[in-house]
Figure 1 (cartoon, rainbow, N blue to C red):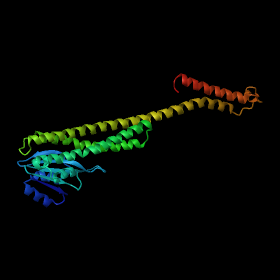
Figure 2: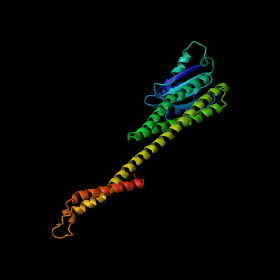
Figure 3: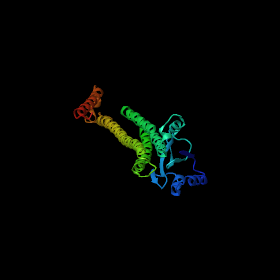
Figure 4: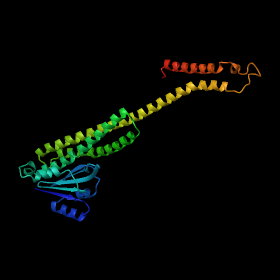
Length: 297
């Protein structure tokens, strides 16, 4: 049994030569070089073709397409760039102890590689969940404007992850239900475990996406509530000062009380100024008590 891992898709001639050596179907080879394929599984006379997207850089969540060809005694993988989650599989192959990778056929090696790709999504999904939980705690404590941009960024990343994982479930289901002679019933049991992982990933991503949508709505509601609270306070302050401004405007008119007894007679009172201030304070306090009675405060 042989595993041939090809890194880089620029040398079309070499890819065609590899296809001739392993009798790979030309249509499948076209899908190898045309990146951006939807996850799928195709079956030919002597081999199967499986394509999916993988994360080759966990720090930046960079995606790339990886293609698998496997038959009875070979596995050929094509990836766009260096960097993959296959090191645990390579370590198991290097060991001198008996292992299932050495004793079983190529379909089990293909399962191990595909399962490594699927499992590589879990750290990304878990990290996203931790970020969402942290933002939720901050929102409940002290909502800020940058939370909206953070949530939108995470939601876009989660939507991309969802579009990547959802077709993977159908592709794995196709592998499990196939009757190809080079996929044994025992290996299908392992593929079924990988399918369970993919389903769990899809459910977790969908749950995170719904949580983020809810947090965005909560942030908008909190912002609206805060705005309404500020507007309510300003309205009450304005309502208190409107009658006081009215009184100050009346007493600020320049009518001479010496010309007529009806012209601002309170200007001649010895306690006119304290009386005016006292009346204005009475009006303000009365309005505050009225607002509290109506439960507007």
